[in-house]
Image (tube, rainbow, N blue to C red; front, top):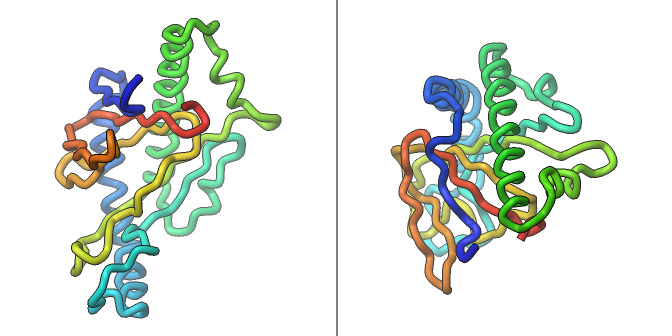
Length: 194
């Protein structure tokens, strides 16, 4: 109610599935994206910057769209095991999101399914997974991981790395660290839902 964020631990998604998603995501980054990111950093001279860069996000990312139509077959370099596990993980996240939306409906005195129907759209709901990696930065005092932003969507489910912190939220004009917690899902109420 006051923060727009909360964290869920007993969410029903198996820890084994989450560990597999994490392992395969890190393997995919090392195998397919790490070198491209290093080449981008070198081509822009970002390893030797001397003053703060405010218009850059230090992340290596790709987006998997699940609904209304999947784009997983169009993403290059994804091996079959990774595609299968991400499809399974997305199905679990979708169930969790729908359950959370129903709980929000209940708490707001709305009928079950109301929020989901509002976000449904003419072609069905939009649902995707942004897969991000934040490589070590040679100048962390000059380049931020992500610029301050809000999330435009309805409900955002974040599976945060439990070893690398960095997620912060703005509360009463103060940036508050969100410590990583193993196997948890951070829930962010997006601008549209707010």
